[in-house]
Image (cartoon, rainbow, N blue to C red; front, side):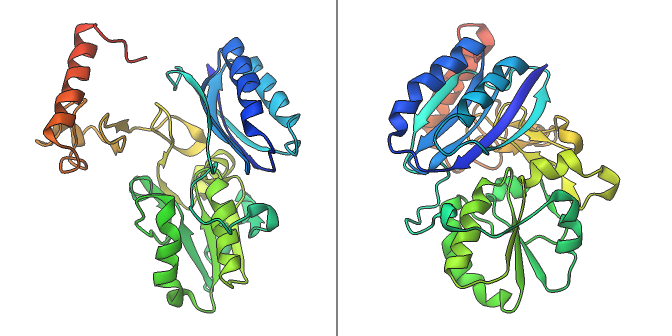
Length: 295
């Protein structure tokens, strides 16, 4: 079994580029694969590897400036869910495109998973899912509002267009692992919203800690690795993924006439041109003939 770790922390890195090579070297040495993002505002990533190797990575990150209490969630996978190890430099560790947003200056009130159900059932609370539309499409909390955003960059405009709907309401927000809510709650505070809350540890921590019989979660949670989705107890889910658009698909979706393995699905049939489809089709042909190893 591989240990899968989703991690993030907002802190000030004066020179994130100097941190890149040691992180990559450690991960390669320990057989860890996945992606870690570094920016001046902190670190974010999801990786997988042998348990001891991942624990050494945690220790390394905890020793970085300001990271002694960084957040990390863990689950397991029967097979390696990533193809390679990447450590990348970015302007933001989660892209919102709002230069004045600073989670280190303040965020919403953290709500432990054990207390989340009580909060979101309160009549004066509105619950907002901050994830992208294709993530919301396979699972969300009962009664949650779906902003139907394509990317996290779209959230500020959605809020501006809809904020009057939530006058005199407490706002509870959630995302996969908690990182988007660090920014979205700070954004709302900057917009003058006083009572803002977010699920500590995100959906992953909720699914890990809250028994299914007590859960307010419906469906599965999309994850950004080859598992595609997870359910209660962080058990691997039932979804596959379209190679072209990377959106989750079901076995029934594969029976639709629009589906071509490795090339397109019903969700992206109008998003690519024939040159793209030819390229995707050639890659799939090489995989099936053994000319290309997708791992």
